[in-house]
Amino acid sequence: MATLRVRAYNVRFGDAILITVPDRDPATRKTTTRHILIDVSNVLNKEGGADTVFKPVLEAILKHLGGRALDLYVMTHEHLDHVQGLFYGSTKAFPTGQLEEKLKVDYAWLTASAAKDYYDTHPAARKQKLTFLDAYARIRLHLQAAPPEVASRFEMLMANNDPSSTGQCVEYLRGLARKKTTYVSRGCDLTGAHPFTEATFKIWAPEEDTSDYYRGLL
Image (cartoon, rainbow, N blue to C red; front, side, top):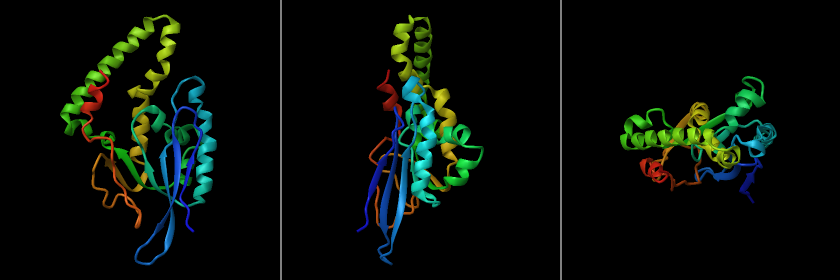
C-alpha cells in the first residue's frame, strides 16, 4: 500500500516540512512517489536561530530525495522564520553551487506578494506596506534608546519582520524552480503549477491583496 509521509524537521524557531505523496496516474494506474518541501527556516535570534541546523536538515532532505528532483517547493509567507533556510544553505552551509546541484526543484509556489511587480499592481497593499515599514523603523529607533532588558524582549519579533533580511531570501526563492514558479493566493488557478496527476490542491490563504494584513498590524 502506498504511504503518505510527513517529516517535520527541528530547525528550532521555524518550519521545515517534507511531505512524501504517492501520486497515481488515473490513465496508466502507475504510482509515482512525489515530494513537497514546505519552507525550511528559522529566525536570527540567539539559540532560536542557530543556523547550524540547516546543513543536517538539508542533508536529510537530500537523502530522502535519493537524487531525484523535488517536485514542489512551497513558501508559506515572507517572514524570516520561513524563508531563509535554502538561501543560507546555498551561501554558507554548502560550497558554492553544491546545494543547487543536489537540490533540483521542478515547481515552486510563493505567496502572491513575493512577486517582483506585486506592489506595482496592488497600490493599496503598497500604501499599507510603506506605512508598516515606517512604523517598523520608528520602533527600531525607540528600542535602540530603550534599556537592554526592554529591547531584548522584542529582539526576535524585530528580526523576524526585518525586510532587509527577508528580501535576499525571497529573491533566491524566486529563481528556485526549473520548470515554473507560481505566485499563489486564495482560490488561484493551479493549472500547470505542479506535476501531480491524482492529487488535487486548493489554496485557502493568503488573500491576494495584503493591505488588510498590514492594516491589522498598525
